[in-house]
Amino acid sequence: MRRLFFIAVANHQQRYFRNLLAHTGLPGQVLTWRGLLRHWRPFVRSDLSAGEHRVWTEEKIAERRRKGKSVSPWYRWGLHLEQRMAAAALTRLARAHDGELVIGVWNGGHRYHQIARRILEHGGGQMLYFENGILPGTTTLDPQGVNYYNSVPRDPAAFYQRACPGHDHDGATLVPRAPRCHKGDAIELPERYWFVPFQDDRDTQIREHSPWLEDMRALFSALSEHHDGHHPMLVFKEHPSSPIRYPDLHERSGSRERFANGNDTQTLIEDAEAVITVNSTVGLEAILLGKPVLVLGRAFYAIPGLTLSAEGPEELAEALHRLSDWKPDPVLRRKFLDYLSRDYCVPGSWREPDRAHWRAVEARVRGYLTARKTATS
Image (cartoon, rainbow, N blue to C red):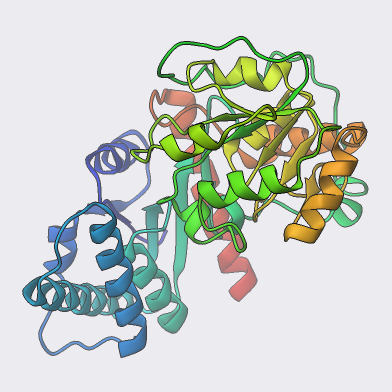
């Protein structure tokens, strides 16, 4: 079996990957950024362009500035050098394994992960992406990517309505996520409302997969502008993990908008007539609970018949008028959730892995590698 290298850029990733190797028969090694750079040699050069390195450098610098940190010329130079060394180290690994290199990463958004993906595209090999499970009590493991980039089929006619059998759920295996932490006092909710969960403006879900709404202020403005007196009230909740606060939006809130930062998210979903989201996991939780969902960004669950979608202001106005009377296709919803539960998600949370979880991950990894070898032979 090919040897795996797991690139860990955070402590929890390092712990999980080390435990994965310790509890399974998978041959591999966990590389921190220091461990990765030990594979660097001065005479090795990667095939990556200066433009690619420049993009990754500017993304890191923009992230640093969002945190209020300064960027000196020395920092920029050091960052560029570090990336060049990482690319050279990964190139050396890829050449040493002659197109058989397998790299496991968490999420895939870090610049090291993006460099690894490009190296493997040039020299052959395979990426495996790990992430929080998209259903409660599960873990994601996908050879294609996570979130919008994942391999979940999107065509209802070609897959779910023909190829996917579907089974009735008794509610025991598909349950909502545990309530999120909340801040402040709960408010009394209106009798009729649409729930709008805010997301973190810094997250890749917004930076990469929200083409026409650049942040939560743009989301608030778009919905407020197209909301009329016939629609239910809009109830917003700020993301509990985001450091960004919106006192200006609280001031702008009128009779048709309200913030419920202190209310439990699950209750907000359950009591809402519908959920409007850019591409939050709250949208999937709403699907679990059978609620109508309007998606305004790019999301893997934005499937015709399963959700409504709006890709601009004009489509938003039309979608809001449809939302009050629209319901998801019950058969499609059942088959979609069945596929996620039975075929896509790895059972067991990575936070509390047990023996069954490790066995499932090992089987999934071996299956992906066998399928790739068959496809390329």
